[in-house]
Length: 124
Image 1 (tube, rainbow, N blue to C red):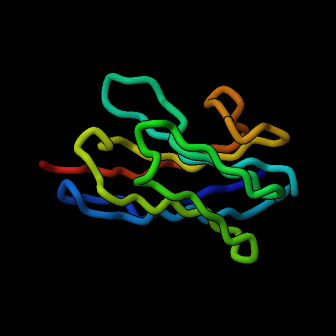
Image 2: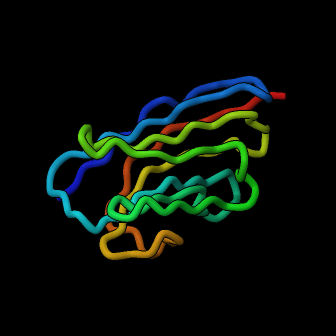
């Protein structure tokens, strides 16, 4: 009932920046936690960053703290992930997702709606 569409991925040199966007449409609720997840080749999907739409609390996995910033624009129903100082290990498919009545430390199993993903490739 909720559609999420990611954009902004691509190829970037190490040390560069990308800004991912996630546009949401369809049914909405006030209690959704939104997050960015990524899955690299041969690895499990992990939570990268998340934000509470109602409370504004954020979560970041340790490996991206200080480099990535998650934000939202509720008026535009859009979620963002600003990624700076990118490293080759950030290479993955990045997914936008939402969980209803889930804490800011949202795990993949708690996700109710997934986007299709956008590829991020960081070259050395």
